[in-house]
Image (cartoon, rainbow, N blue to C red):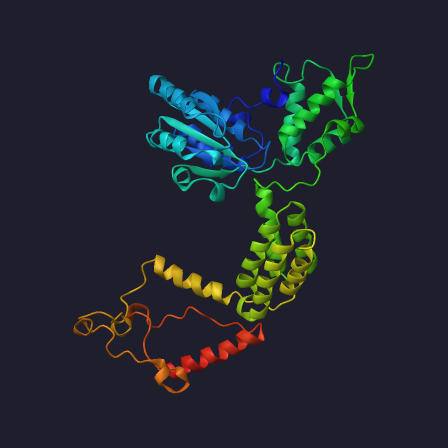
Length: 423
């Protein structure tokens, strides 16, 4: 049985790759690796049909290394051992490891030393975002490249190649492809070259030739042969994270209609719990101190939704989305803690002042621990001026109040008053 057209038309060298110019054109990273014959393991991630396997195949063809394909989910550690033994005998092997996000720990532990010594150049392929789905041990030993959906022009280029290639493509047939059919083929497949070539092959093989031997492919024929994408929300792909991102950004931007749309998409995809968790994040990250009451109401609504389940859960969640969209917004607490963490991670900390150190043990006073600490409740207003930050950063200010809500405006006034008293 003949292999599918999409398989047959895979590029044989890096020059044959369609699209992905940001990776393979002159001067770009993968092209540089190939030209210098200095390959390193990598992860290619992007939607189906965008060329992950093709790039791996092209790298192998351009470098003349052995090329093997395994699946992280279905192939075994023994299969990996066979590839490693081949590399020991004959030199470097390029291993395309499909669904690399499903690589379990035993296989990972076996593979890691061979990646480190360069015996195996692994090209992991995944539709999932590797920064979320891939084990850090693998990520740290690979370069990560995003493979983007192909443009309409890229699809058209690949289609023309397939029509003209007499060895691997459809060039042995006399095919007339109408312009509007080509446009539909390039647009309706949404950057998925595999779908485009599959549709083209089905149309070519299922359409009887005319009396002159020409296979005439019209728009109507291509519409029949291309599978139209129904609404889907791929929980394992980037679309999942894109919808969640759009959901939060719509609420942050106070767009009620956009936020309700993305909430609906999450619910239709069966992701009620994801929607609930995201609303909690949004309440505290984007509304925050501008309206703490909205944060509390979100907690209550989420608890109600989780108990009710769909379809009734849509009601408290929709109310919460509208509430959060139209609420004043403040991310001051996020900025404050992130600024503090940034200093800590840079090593900008210093020693805890002696008067704040724990003094609940024998000998603490001899070490000057807790001496001179002033208990705020013993002073009017429950406040006394004393140093809390280490000497190294004693004048640092992490929290900058915003005035977008009545509550935080009040906090800001008290914050300013305390700062004035410190002077």
